[in-house]
Length: 336
Image (tube, rainbow, N blue to C red; front, side, top):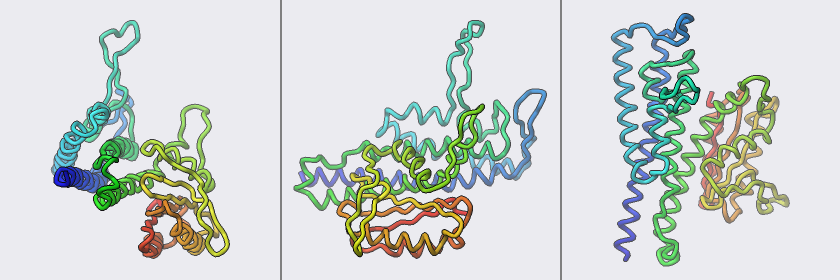
């Protein structure tokens, strides 16, 4: 029995390792996408109503082949895992790669297909069917790529490494499993933070006269982040009270109880930068250290105007506040 459980644990621990490596590779590929599209000029052809790129130079062709090999290799490896462990998402994963087409329902176009969206593969191959500028293409590709990564991360939510009836008997194994799951959840949350500014910007560019969503304070940050978290987490508990510290108590922004994670959000503003945010988070860390369900505190500081003068330094200093009761992670985004 113990041998079977250990074998099952090791198998899934290996799976988590594969997912982690693929996510690390994905971050590198995103940087390469940005670099690749900075190598050439993109033109809009008024006559044919499409975007075109001139003949590639030797340097551009070399960069193109390298990027295609890296992405296609990543896609094939990730596809194998999705197919085996998350089959209900395989169709969506493939469509993000290949694009999506549907039957044209207009009476005179029976049998024709219409493009719903162009996939990553065609976009990297410079096959565009509409007007794009360079930044739009990069955002489009990375947006689709981020969705693929989210599906990949979702594998962890589909796996029950140890049956619940065995949890009490093999407590050590269960604790190790929970630690792995919490790490995966933290990685997913970090990726949401990394894309938060992109999503916020998109919500300010809407069709017609539709109202836009502006982020003006911490409540707006929480509203958008809550919506993003709901894509991946079922049990999100907002604003639970923390235990009293130094005669006062406070409300936490989000508690992911199953993962043992608390998320605290901040938004900078004029005269509310490094010093003020740092002092607030120090107090928050002291509060959360006493909360029974908080094993990991993740602090998200949204700083679109760049009021934080030394974001990496502040992240590093506050993350050192981790102690045996709580792991502290601080993310200031955009990263400047």
